[in-house]
Amino acid sequence: MLNRVSRTWLLGGIWFATLALIIAWSVAVGASLSTSALLLVMGVVPPGIVVILGFSAPPPTLAERLHSVNAKDGR
Image 1 (cartoon, helix red, strand yellow):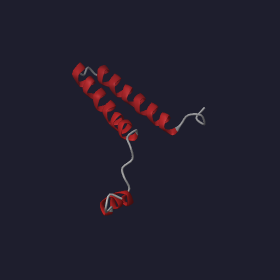
Image 2 (cartoon, helix red, strand yellow):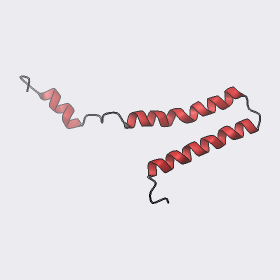
Image 3 (cartoon, helix red, strand yellow):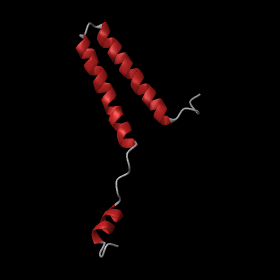
Image 4 (cartoon, helix red, strand yellow):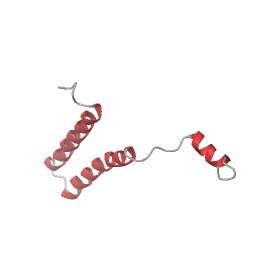
């Protein structure tokens, strides 16, 4: 089973399972709804930022930066 699951999916599943346990625990001990919502937001935002950055274009390499600076006569 684990041979067919990618490392990213496995890590994401563990992340969200842990997040669900933390939220359930906070509700079980009587935390307010706003505290549970804050825990949810704090658990979802970091992976969301990582996903957004992962799909963006890669940054230019040092060679690409130097080449664009040293270009003369529009070359």
